[in-house]
Image 1 (cartoon, rainbow, N blue to C red):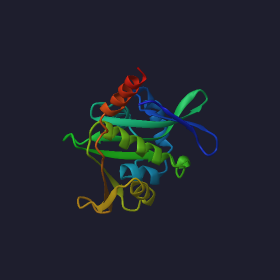
Image 2: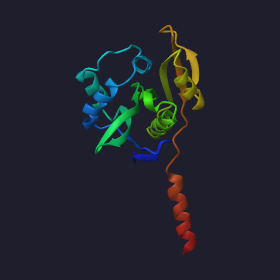
Image 3: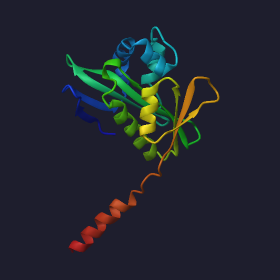
Length: 190
């Protein structure tokens, strides 16, 4: 995936790109700045401190079964991560489970929409059929984001206070049509 670049409402240059192993130290620092509510919404508990092992798991993963993104802004010559998203193939080749996290200062700026659109696009590209996620029932912002992207919201019978959001993904577009169209254009020019 190519990095996506844009400007936030305040003019800050932002970049959405794949997560790198080298992001680990700054990811740990950024996670440490999250409010207890943001920690709870993403990890379902108010984690006090993120261990090196947890950060390693977030930044070192098998790209064949997981896809992780990070949103960064430049500060003093470093890319500072403040948001991210990922999905993990459920192992059946059909479904994946996603999650998102936006730093407190950046919430409400439609960054989650950009991340979720990119996750959906990559899941479709990989031929997955369904994306799902678990969301705390009182996380209204995430439920609103999921609904805006067509996810169905249902009670998760496995855990009280948790909603299951599910999206049936479209089939990937066959790549033959663009090639065929280009060939037809070339043939017509002869």
